[in-house]
Length: 377
Image (tube, rainbow, N blue to C red; front, side, top):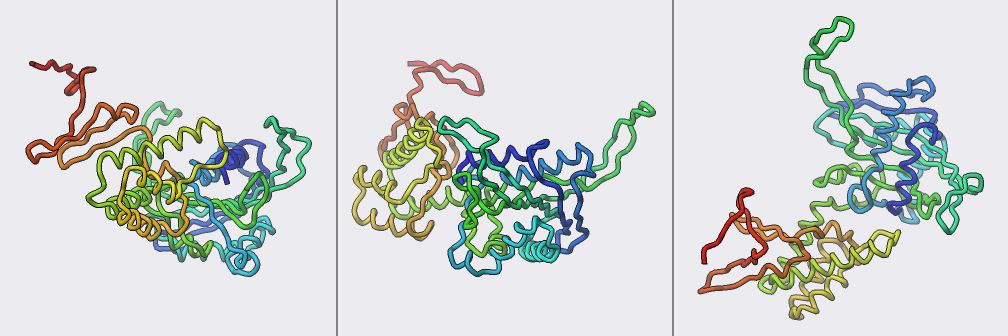
């Protein structure tokens, strides 16, 4: 899926834009025991409650592709005959009305998901009459010829609030409010099937993870029976490790700047071109930059091996997970220097009498703790 398609689905979760008639949920303790479950009609809920439930569901597909959202792809054999895909299809085809299938999903999640606090599993089914879009992008509401039916799952931590004073308007005074259990924004979730090219794709799902640190591997394996997407921070760390371990003494300032600038340029061209498909960077594209900087054949071969071991053969990565396009950061044990990448010409490195120096041109002015500094000749 692309961000534009995700945004189109997100717009469903407000007011009368959706066809969600019921909300199903399961309240689970931190040790995986089911505390309670419910199956409520949206029609009997007040508007404020409806909005809060819709907001929790909407956040399960929030963010952007390659960051908080990732595609899950099912193999042909899974779609043809597998327990995991069969269950998801049963949940969808029944509109979550199949109690046995819903309880089976609850069991799979509670056995595979390990969270530090209690959590809520929230489920909904939506049927979307997809409007036709002309070549100019205009919606034509009355000319849709497809219906996208999908389930969405939002898994939210439930935390105990702190006691506090609360204003009581009836007596014009502040009274004690006891601790209560409050549902927080989802930590993870998914929607099935995928909405690719604005059409239903039963070979895919979209998976959401709020954290940059974890990907809930056991959950992904249990629900989708596939490898979990690598967490965002792990992608950055792995990319740094690949360059460091493969290139070793050839990992020079010039080389790292060249990689950063090349990836940053790709991102800018992609943005300026307003390409809908998300940009992905391959091993060969990074390798071409390394080759242009004069890396030895030995180090190039090591880079290819390290890259494939870290990310898998023929892996494509979101460039925003590899670099920060807005800054270059130089770090030593006691110093951190951040540079606008468009002004890397202000920085140079030198070795003077065996000591390494980072030199920064500050003719445009320099401040220390906000105080302008003056230099003596």
